[in-house]
Image (cartoon, rainbow, N blue to C red; front, side, top):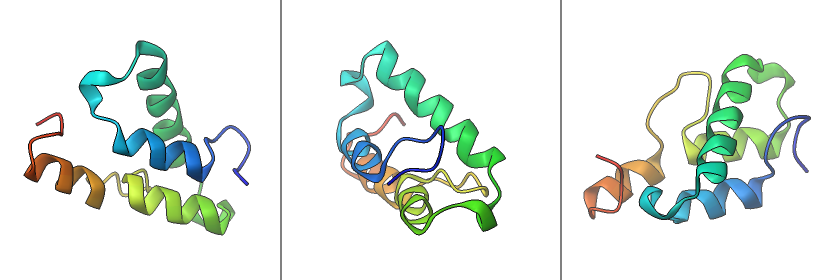
Length: 80
């Protein structure tokens, strides 16, 4: 289950697997909105699944690059 205004864990994981170059404008917009919501929402108010999803996708309040993004960059599928 997702927190209000946030994508659920399944959507976050599916989005992270898909290369950025293949994402639609709408998908990219949803990612940006979720990233902003993640940053604004205090860690203490996040559900366990949102904390896990944020850690995997890099949307935690620290705004660090995710482990998945680092792996995608290493094999040439990332945006860098």
